[in-house]
Amino acid sequence: MRTFLRLSGLILPYWPSMLLAVMLGFLTVASNIGLMGLSAYLIASAALHPPVLDLMTAIVGVRFFGICRAVLRYLERYVSHDATFRVLGQIRVWFFAGLEPLAPARLLNYRSGDLLSRIVADVETLKNFYLRVLAPPLVALLVLLLMVFFLVRYEVKLGILFMLFFLGAGIGVPLLVKGAGRNAGRRLVEVKSRLNAHLVDGIQGMTEIIAFGQVKTLCGQAGGLSQELLALQRRVAGISGLSSALTGLLMNLAMWSVLVLTIPLVAAGKLKGIDLAMLALAVLSSFEAILPLAVSLHYLDESLAAARRLFHIIEAKPAVLDSAPTSGEKPQNYDLQVKGLRFRYNGLGPWVLDGLDLRLPEGGRAALVGPSGAGKSTLVHLLLRFWDYQEGSICLGGRMLNDYTQEHLRSLVGVVSQRTHLFNATIRENLLLAKPEASEEELRQAARRARIHSFIQSLPQGYDTYVGEGGFKLSGGQRQRLAIARVLLKNAPILILDEAASGLDPLTGQALMGEIDELMEGRTTLIITHNLRGLERMDQILVLDRGRVVQQGKEEMLLKQEGLYRQLWQISQDALPASS
Ligand SMILES: Nc1ncnc2c1ncn2[C@@H]1O[C@H](COP(=O)(O)OP(=O)(O)OP(=O)(O)O)[C@@H](O)[C@H]1O
Ligand SMILES: [Mg+2]
Image 1 (cartoon, helix red, strand yellow):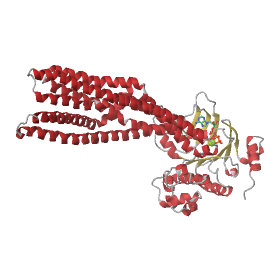
Image 2: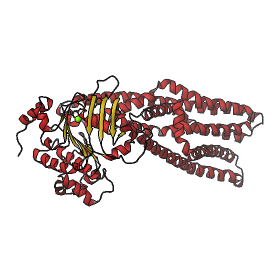
Image 3: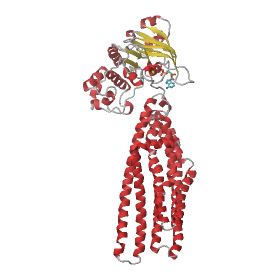
Image 4: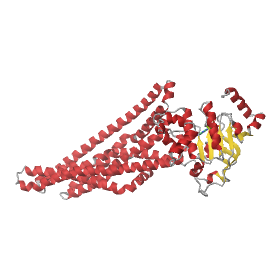
């Protein structure tokens, strides 16, 4: 019920259009009743060979209702679909806006195909909520009132009889269908989403699947889900056929009963013979309003299941909340201080950061090194407030990190992350993400400094080249350099580079580090790297192991100590021959 009310609430702003559509729907059925009833009257009267002039009113009436019916049906479809698609557009925007604060922490629990399925298929399913769930009962109710009002003028019993059949077909059949469907609607939504998620996953990982020879397995799984979907769809189609048949049966029974009741009235002289056909056909055609009701409970089921899936995500509590920001003003300085920081991704897991301390004065350059899984990228996530830490503190410019709104904080930090995402757009659009108002010259300058400008120029379409899904038309190193160009454009006072030079050949890497050197000038910089070359320029090196800083100081000093840094350095010296 709560879902139903919330869903109706989303439609509320559009109620005038929706109401208009219901009225138009009612008038369409009413025109049909008029058309059929009057046609019957006309044919019955004509059989008695009256002067043609006597038939003129009925002839004009038939024409009128005939035209009205077509025009009104068109208008009804137009208004209801227009309003429905506006609502769907609104719901999509609302859903996307609701997703944003959940990224990335909460969304990691969902498969991307599942999210896609929710935002596309589930929202699409909701269109039935208005078109097939809310509107038809209202139209049917109005038609019922009209017909009862019309029939009791002839005979009260007729009105009651009609009501019984009409309600039987309008309420009884849908309930029966719902019982027979056994939640087919809800399961249909689930299976569709599973199939979508499976296929999106499969397409994204196609290269790996082919390389590992798993195409058959993937196809088999997709086939299994398709079969399940097919079985459900078959059941829904069968039920829908059964319900149409039942409604048709009741419709014809209603007409037949009306005849059984009225024929004696004609014989008794209480009713004119020519009214007989008119009443029978009016009753028959009024059932047009009932036909869509048969499957409306099924669609209600389906819409509620889809809505629940959407609300489930939107209602998830974001991992990080903006407390009332003390101020939106700039911090006094860009000093970064971390004390006793403890963090784990979930309450039961191991501590990923376990009492981490570091201090990075404004303008200072620090390198963070350490074995894989030590928690380096996690620290970046916390600095950007993608997650909130559990214990300890992080201060920026003397203020706690959570005094800043997430938006403000992220505007102060330029990040090249370990997993850069490029959009399936042009190189220019990908760069402009960092600074939408950047001039062409600024773009080129940033690209030049990131050592990617000449490559871009060598492409036939230059900056307008599409980079493909996830930037796959570029090499790993080129993607990385674009990401660096993006950060150069953003020009933020704090710089974090997580494995920025990974994937680059040693020469380019070295040249790029030279650029980054320049870029670091005057900025608070944290470089995370596995490449221990060139770290002598850093003010300090922090060696992270299992969530703690185990060594800290200038390279010169660390190399003199017996410890993890020397071990790592030794290995990197052995692994990489001198590049120049
Ligand atoms: N979203 C997540 N949920 C749960 N655990 C995570 C998540 N992200 C990372 N971890 C875990 O946290 C630990 C630290 O990961 P992190 O990415 O910070 O390592 P790292 O030091 O950056 O390693 P690398 O050098 O390989 O990039 C790892 O054990 C990892 O499995
Ligand atoms: Mg990492």
